[in-house]
Image (cartoon, rainbow, N blue to C red; front, side, top):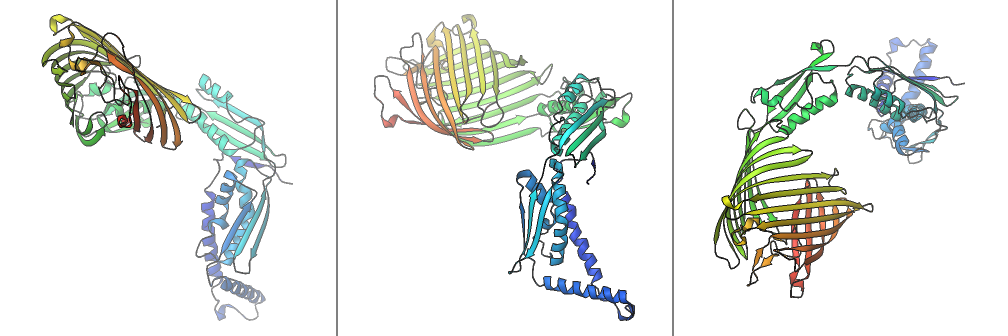
Length: 634
């Protein structure tokens, strides 16, 4: 009768035993080689019967082995009765299968490894809870010289857990989180025994203890006692948390930034907080996101700990101070364009930054430079100063604009917010109006917030952007107040689809519209507005039918995307809207279909759209617009 089997703290489905088995044929071969060396006549007396018998046996072994050596042994291994992970584990344990393609494999090896196969298969199924495995094994040499090893496996009944004894001890034994985790331990009496489930559950308990400040947490007793006769197992798991540790000091090692400035990034974790891997990762995350460092290397110094308070050393290496990039692109709205970007990551020891960008196309020229000063909590607040030069030439309008802006940026209740003042000088021509120069000194605020699922195909997401600005007429060419809101929502539909709802609302109250700069007027049409119409082609018109923009804008979009392949979507959409001054006299509608390619960094869009109806005109095939763009969710 089989007795009980005792396992001390087994670690999952061991795929590594097969490696040890691979080594055994080598040792076997060496032993056989030693045995097969011819003995000297002087060392083999004729009257020694034992020696003669041994020599005779050896000659038979030499003969058998010699018959197997002439060519590479052909071997087929067939395991039946198993599938999935159980089959994979049996294959990993089976030494005969591991040596199947070894050019040095001999028939003697095949027989030796086949003799061990039953035991190997039985052991390979124990991590799954099978301790009464029956294996019918056969090995035969076919007429063509191929050896065929077959194993019919009957796993038998699966071991059930009869008892689980789980206890916490140590300083943190009464921690509510640890007690809750112990009560929710996924391995319970009545469950089937599975090493992987048990080991992962035990590991999660130790990880939890570590995250709560107990880095010395360990399993004092981790025992699985299996009774193969009764097909039952008793689990004893006694965990000791050890002492709770705290961070005594966070020592930053660098010489290229002001120490006080770098310390301001350590807001979420401070000296006196619990020592845990989670807190160390939080320190690393905040410093990496700062953008000043190429390496953030953290080392707790337990040898220097005193009264369970651990100093933490953080070694920082600087990132490259300047970065350049250049590009060539195509945008349906502005056509072929060239771009250049420059960033200076560390102007001085107080973390000041600067960047600039240039974008050039046939219809638009943009040159912008920014200077950033981190303040207070540098992760969430900063001052920004920018200079922006822009030139734009469209069919119905032209403008040259200079913007000088100073802003205070902060993260307010998860809203990315900016409070700013702006000085705008613009020379513009719209429709039949003569060239006009305007100067505006405005104050305003912008807020943005978004959420989206992880992955390159988010099916649930939303985002809102709001801008409010204005100026009294005393310090500007005319008084105005302007509000602009954009929003987008992604909703999951069926198992592979999503519905995208997009909207835009803009309202402005202007004293003298003729002096109101073109850059602040509202337009509709284009890739991100009403598809099927050219960029900025929709708006109020003068008597010669030139589009002159509007004080208000209202657009909406309904799109359905369906996943047709791993990285491809098919899309259909309807857009509607217009820009206008006082009354919305006409709503332009565009519809179409397209394709989306989900790249690792964003979505590449190709749309074919046409105006459902045009104002006082019919629609023809020549009106179909091709919209091409790239979208990144931030």
